[in-house]
Length: 323
Image (tube, rainbow, N blue to C red):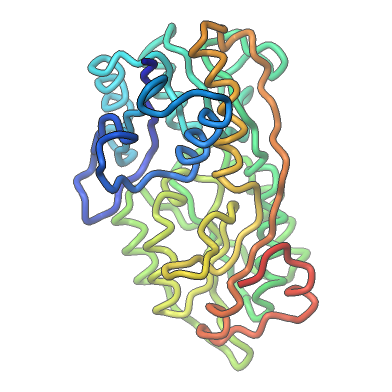
C-alpha cells in the first residue's frame, strides 16, 4: 500500500500548534481536512485506487512558525511514497526536507518564481502539480468583492508576511482598487490567533448603505486555513469577506460571504492523476505543471441579508452560484 503525506499550513487556535493524523482514511477520526485532500481521495478512487487498500493518507498541519522543521520531521518519521503539498510554503518545506521524495501540489500560483520548478513544461525537480492562478486573479477578486458589496470603501487584504504570491499581487490589486473606487490596505497576520485578533479589532464601520470595511483573503495558505473563524467573526461583527476559492460559500454556518476562483475540491481532483503517476514510479520532473479550469463566483445572499448588505440584482444574476 502506498503512503501519502498531505501537508498544510495552519491550525485552529483552539488546537495545538501542530498535529499529525495517521491513516485518515481508516482511522475513524473526524479530521478537519482541506477540500484539496477530499478531492485527492475522490480523484484517486475514480482512477481505480482503493482507499485503505492501495493508498493511505497521513495528514500533517502546523502554524507558520516552525513549519519547515515540522515537515522535515514528519517526512523522516513517516517515510512517505509521495507528499501532497497544499501551498507554496508546504511545497518549499517538503523540497527543503528531501530532494528525492516525490511532491505533488494541487494549487501553486507561481511555481517558477518561487523556485519549485525550472519551468512549467519541464519541472526538472522533485515537484509538480496543478496551477490554479489564484494570485493572478486577485485583482478580479477585489473588483467582484466591491461589486458584491457596493458600500465598501476600504478593503483589507489578509496574508502572512513576505508571502511571495500575495506580495506579487499588490500591483494588480492596487490598480483594481483604484478602478473600483476603494482603498486597499494590507492586513498582515502571522498565526491563526493573529487572524482572530485582527478580525476582532477591525472596525465594523457601517454607513447608511451598508458595511464600509471588508476583508479580502489573498492567495495565502494561513488565511485560507482560518476560514471558519473569518466567516464566524465576520458574520457576528458585520465585516464582509471574500475568498479566492468558493468551497466555503455554503448554506450551513459558518459560511464565507462570497468568493471567486477554482474550488480546492476541484484542484485536488485535478492533481490526483499526477499523484497516481508518481506513486507508480513516474518522476515529478518529467510531468509538466498543468493549469486547471473551472472558475466559479459564489455568493451567500442569505448571509448578506443578515449582515445588512443589499447585493445588486445584476450581481446575483451574474454569479455562478447563489445561496
